Length: 120
Length: 112
Image (cartoon, rainbow over all chains, first blue to last red; front, side, top):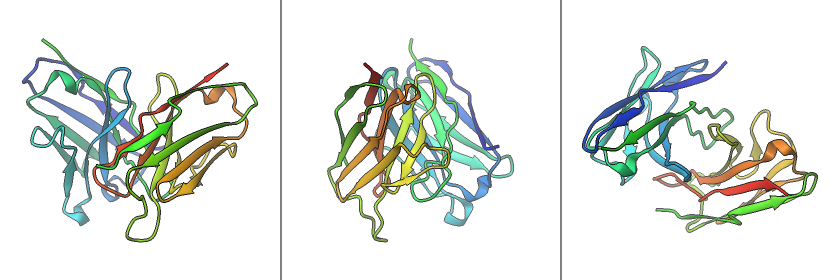
């Protein structure tokens, strides 16, 4: 069974940092690009960023709203993707989902999400 | 960025009746490989999004055949043949042809 388990969310003050984790199982993680998508309370979905595979040099791309503040990384040995979030703003408050976000083939997987609240 | 515009944003449907959601993109979603990358997602209340359709009209495994996707270029449609109670939730289109990936605003489907 495929599983993505998101963790690491919590309450953080503006300007603070947080690191989210996404533990994968049930599929070949090392062959899959991984994305993060967020959803502010009561709002729609916003793509945050993506990391490609080792074959593709772990290339990353980010939404303008988080570029320079957020960093996606991965550890294929532990089947885990990460989202390091620095210089957090109140507008970063959202549920963060890790997802394969496949656009071209069968099989697309999402985590259960983890809530990040940025507030003083 | 490619802007994805959905309509309507809210849809009240009678059980057993059809429903249709439109999604328009500000740029063509035909990629350099000639394929069109438009996905549809369903998000039930309190749940993570779930992909229903990829590349305009390909249903994911386990998705009932009452769901169908169509369209081309910049105009796309998700149809639900006969709405069932389990179909309530918010539906999003998303383009996969350009970076950054962008989603429509979402269409909330409720039962009359």
